[in-house]
Structure formats: structure tokens, C-alpha cells
Image: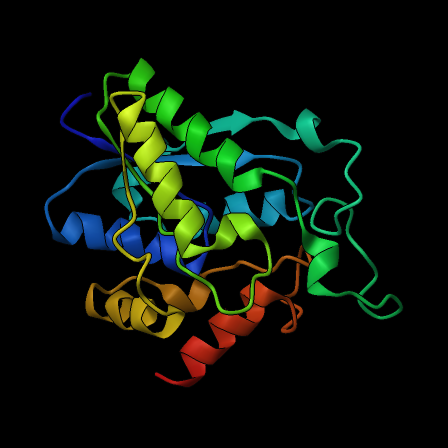
Length: 205
């Protein structure tokens, strides 16, 4: 197993692009999907199976920590009615989500004697959460590397969503089939931070 890496995969544009980018560079990976109680979990997982290279669909590993957020008021956990309810970016906040995800991935990797975890997180201009910033990801990666044997690799961290989409086209990733809406579990709302970033990127291609 130690000749592979772990890829945090969600079926979104960024992680899907990274899957094909890794293979283009000759790096094999195990896709790791985290269930943390997101209302769109079924759509995300089904999308992931549709966008991953066929050679890696049966390699998907799933970790379920949904009970951590069972009392959360986040609208990313408790889906709203898009036709009746107003929503802001603040309503989508999930405390410490990315800390949990990165720590879980590092722990999972170490249990398999895998040395590297790849994450496709980028420094979003629209996400308001402190754990979505470039500074946070850099410090988190340094901490996990310093206090453990796992290196967190974030090659897209300095890029915009548009730049990632350009890479996606270059490596022939099916970015048009990806899904990453925070507010709706079925039809992308077009207004949440994830949708805004994705639509801007695709419209600019």
C-alpha cells in the first residue's frame, strides 16, 4: 500500500480534477470519502462513482463520522427548502469540519502505512469559514507533518477555481458532471459559495 497516496474525494470539481491530475503524473491513489452528516451525501457519493476513473471506483474507502454533527444547526447538515427559506454563507458553517477531515485522512493513511494525503482544497474567495483559508490549510499541513509521519499535499491551494478547471480540461477530467452544492442535495442552488466558485470557473473557460 505504501506506493500509493490517499486522495480526499467528494465528487466535486477540485477533487475530481486532482484524481485525474494524479494519474496523469503516474501517482496511484485510494479515494477516501468522508460522511460527516452532509445532507447531500448520497448525491456526492453517487457523483463520485460517476466521475472517478473506472479503475478506481471499487477502491473507494468510506469513513462515517455523521454522528459528530447530529445536533448541528448548519444548513449543510439540515437541508432547507430553497423555494421558501432564505440562506446566507454563515448558515452553512460547520465547526472544525476541515480539521476533522484532514486529521481523519492522515490517521487512515498512517494505518495503511501510506505517507501522503492529497487534498484538493483551494483558497476560496467566497467561503467565510476560517478553516477554508490558505493560512489554515498551510498550518494544518505543517502540524500533521511535524507531529506525525504523514505529509498533506495541497497542490491546488494557491490556485483559483478557474485555474483548477483549466487543469481538469487538460487531464480530461469530467468536470461538467461534478457536484458540490452546499444548500441543495439534488439540484445545485447556484448561490452557495461552492456553486458560485464552480459556476464562475466554468463560465470563464
